[in-house]
Image (cartoon, rainbow, N blue to C red; front, side, top):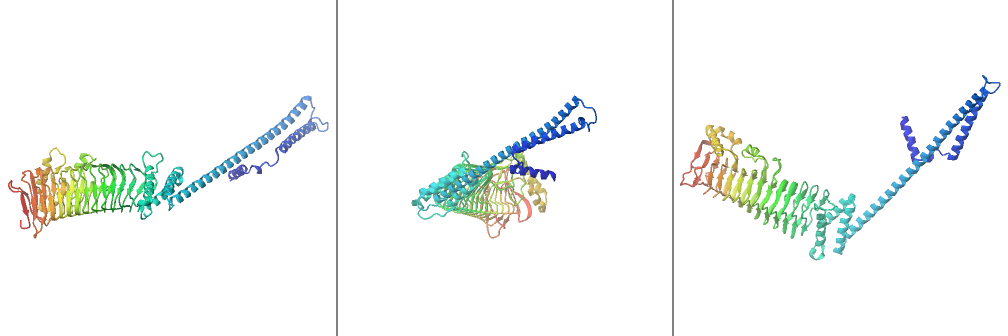
Length: 588
């Protein structure tokens, strides 16, 4: 408690030095001198009484005693004088500290005054720039407002987000009629250009890390080439592209996000060529492509997701030629490229020359398990639950090494799905639960190659022998460790349409048609070249009122496994060399 009181007193001294030592310095010095003389006189008088006064002396005095008495008196006076010197020094120190404190307060007061002046100046610049940007008469004045806000954002880090918000809010304003003649298009393009310049990797002052909300903006030509998003989200959700080009060439997304969800793309083109996606997300979720085009002729996905989930693609072309995908080790995350729940009506998705390389080791890929009727983790491109009702989805000449292409639970009602000339190495195309109702699925001249093993032929043959030794009711128990299927159609439904594998090359692969419900359509492997291949029709169902045509090659290295509907012995059907067409129905 005493220390606290003393600290408070010291603080009071520093804050108000005039409250201590209010006596003038000359008076303090005079007082000390008088005190010293008085004390010396008192000491001398007492000594005289004791040593020299005949009435009170206690012994004989000598000159030496008188000298000693004088020394004592002078010493006492000198001590008091030293104390006075300390008082003087203390007073000087207080004065110095008080002067320093006054200087600091004046400096702080000056700084606050300068800051207020700077802040007032910045706010005045902000107000003036907003007034210029809001000018309704002259596009040139609005352009000067754009550049004024950009310059102010560079000079004002604390208010940078405010400046960006105003620029983005201007881009969100509805476009008035006559935009071509009013100069408004140039003003809006300048807004986009200013934002782009500050998101470049080589920008002198980057704006990465700030919010860019241009949701609902009209993008009649906007350029964001070569921008880099690490901590920012460029929000163009609900944007409208009526014509012109939304250019995002060379886009780098490394942890940030480009959001074009719910965008209405009814004309023009979205240019994504040169995309580098290394974490983060590029989202076209539930966007509507109706007459627009998207070009991503080359690019790399090393992490994150490029998502077109829930899109409507009608009369548009989405071109992803020469896109390379390198998934990360997180095999339970979302697919790097996804079209789940999309509707494709007379639209085209071109994924030709697409390349996928699996980063996991061969041992990891070798030990993967397949759960029947379910999609495994690790899909790198998914078109699950899509409705293909006209148009084309093409993987022509693509190259797959590991991973899965999943079309599980899709409805293929019309149009064409092409994997012609594609090459699959340790990969899988998954149609589990899909419904074929008129679509042509084309694997013509494609190449399928199973897992790399020292003795690949023994894997399939040992697995078949194991099935033959088991009772019928126990054969379902071995599916979790059966050889990896290259084409999987578990629980699919064939109503119409065609699955074409003519002229394909099939090495050490399994075509899994387990539990398929055949009600029509055609599956053709005519002139396919098979080496240790298995077509598995275990527990497939064939409708009484329809005929499914299955065309098999004249190939002795092909094994066909099939049984009656959940009953009957396992049969290895050897296809005669002269017979290439096998009509299967319930009567058989």
